[in-house]
Length: 615
Ligand code: G6P
Picture 1 (cartoon, rainbow, N blue to C red):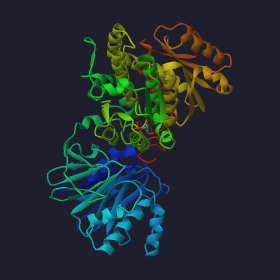
Picture 2: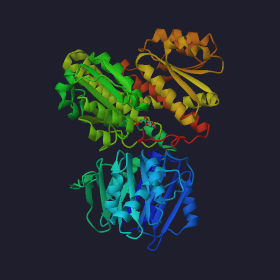
Picture 3: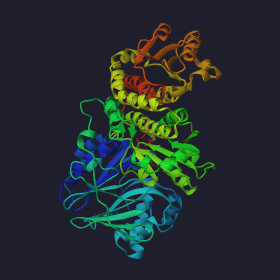
Picture 4: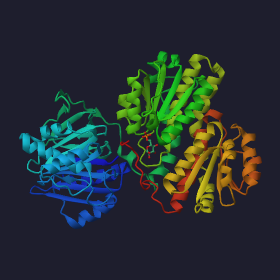
């Protein structure tokens, strides 16, 4: 988490870094800061709060001329979010200035060592320790900044993406990464540094993504120099052409990124299968799958690892793989999996799902699975992300940038990719018939239009949001394929409206949550025709007889639930295994409207971050 941005070149650095910070705010928004060198001295400003607060302060406080600057938007780990703990941080001499994304785990012992040598600290951060360690090395070893950074980093344990410069040599910025992402945009005699490419997309299409354990010295007007932090080995720069465009990272007329992303789902889903699925011909082509077909077909078990919404997509995939491919599937929280002693066999296939491709726990779980000999397949959205590079093979979701912290289109496109893989394996294994295979592909091709239709019911959801926005608790119920959707619906509401919500398998309600039901409890029940309909209807009766308020998600034309429920929201009919792609839509819209009505910050909910690069 945390976003870092830097610029060195011939343009005014301030507007570039400030705009870049706004684009990276999804990574954290507890505090923000910028350090700019104006040719004589450093101008540093930082504040608790959002980048907009920093902007206001900056415009009052300092003139902003200068062609080298670094900036930071923080998700607090060490030290509460306040002005002092905000980045950038100075070294004791005031010469070095640093920004950092990650955690230096041994900062406490390093700090004590430095204190013995006379260093003092104003903040509670691990970052201030790191910048003073670099300074200490620079002074004692009489080495250049790049070397000092390297020596210092070799004494640290933890994760980092850093950018640091020395005001005595304001022609270079030293950057390094381990465990946190760092991209370098290459312009004409200028460099852009950022946690992802979005801050520099309008300036250059050429970027280098530093690999873990690499550092680089970027010098104004010079070639970039990359080295391995551990052994000092030189690395040839690998410049990639970016596929991102500006439109994709702007709101495009919507009030919030979340709403834009909800409405992008029909296109995002078709982008996911475009070029991979030829429904009329009964073909699924996916390079990552085709190149490893034997491994996937011979797998005795699939283990899915993920966090958050991606974990919910994994649960949907469990139902899909078991139903279509008849393969046992286990779905694990990456954070639990990595610290257990899981039994992994050589013929297990591990599927790691991650929108950002940077989640620290998922990354660590992948490394562990690889060490134990499993074949690891990644399902990521962000092209070139750490997880997409760490896995043996994979498939991108191609959802386009997802900026709203509450994940929406990432979820549906993850399910789409996983359904494609399951369909391909099922066809090869013969666990579904040829005619089923053809008809499932055709149905998948109809899904974008059906999502569009589900979105047309948006106006009916607003009055429901108004009726329940002040509820203290919500219950979400679903069965079978719709059970993970219930979990996801509850998560969406919690994340952006701060209303407590629980997702439950509808039948399991009797074993506890039913005690919560009274006339104040809204219960969202997914009661689609093919999803154990009669059983869910019985569950609805149970809620009704305890006076709970029922919001039913039903298939078009439903009569029974309409009679029982207080409200219904319709969605089109589809195959049961594809239903999560539709049943999740009204739940996304319901939480969105409730959050807007409650005046919450939909795109940047408190305490959360889009990309969780700390464990
Ligand atoms: C954070 C985000 C969630 C996301 C989860 C996993 O908690 O706020 O929206 O589902 O991380 O992220 P990943 O990028 O690995 O899918």
